[in-house]
Image (cartoon, rainbow, N blue to C red; front, side, top):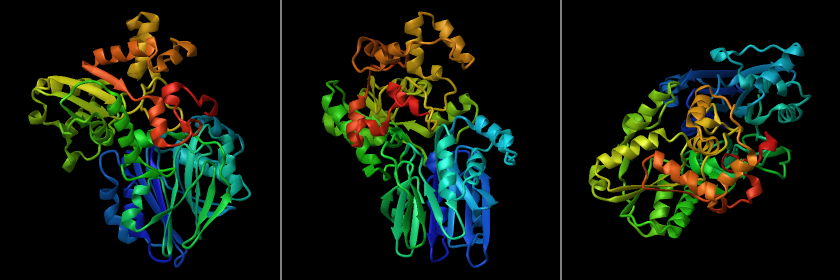
Length: 489
């Protein structure tokens, strides 16, 4: 996904910018970058590093004395190199983006046909942030340029623009990814994750609306474009991506997870001895479930943070699975002879969960039950790339459906191996599997539990997560669960 942070102040901002960006580290794994501007020298300073095998903090800490300025932006990205520096009729500016551009090739061809130049080819691919920059400079001003982005991009794109006298923040037209504005005396800030604010002294001032564009100076925020009425904010911000202390649309991440777990625990009649969470995103749900189910919460699995505080994303899937396994350590003393229930954010492929279940039972767990914070993932994410899956057939729920509908597991495996969608399931049939407690839904969940060697498996209801988020269903993107919102790709 990725996350960004920017601040404009009356004093040197470099250190606060650095820490504000670092607080986005859980959102991206590929590259990190920061850019500042100094009114005293009239110059920009930029640095970009690969984060594939290290942390933002370790890459940039030694460079801080080389930076200058009272305003800056930065990003932890899952795409190519950012920030970009550009010079055009709009003036000099730096740009960072967060989102997913599904029609990048189409936009690139259009720009090339207009005799524009694409210069950033990090990793041999089109740099999506450069495409956004080129669309922006086609406008007579920044607002028209950003509206040009809204018009052309299929997917999502939020951005921060650092000019010589301001920071411009523009949220994705459908509001899929968040931007939160903070204020303190003599300074303003914009961030993907409001968890960056408390320790830097900022208070939340404004939640940027879908399609809204705001301009920040050290003392003010000016709305350049009013927000759209419609919104499709990603539900996974609360379920998975968000840091526990962050707020989106006024709703705290940990509070949402707790409420989801509490309701699920209160409604569940499964007899267990204790409840635990799969670190980190399953912990909030687990504390709520334990309270609702009236059983003890125990840390049966701990995350080893000294060297495994974050899973970097090796391209090899086997390596990724190994890394994910190494950072989580089960506690035999809490498991032995117990009927243990665990909460987790989601099940994507299921590979890691199956291995974890085997280990838990080998260590003496009498039973292993799983409760998942969201409904089954049946559709892939076309908007912010929640799942790294190249094909929906990598989703375990979709594979089970394919097996049921075709009666041919080998055909499903072959389609998955070639990452194709050659075997089509009618949309109306998929909807039957997505409908909670339908015969198809119950059979799918039972089969997933069987394949993962779980004693019982239950997923949160869509209605429960919507209620916990506290927004109308029409304002929350639930495409992964029910296939809705596809018309806004």
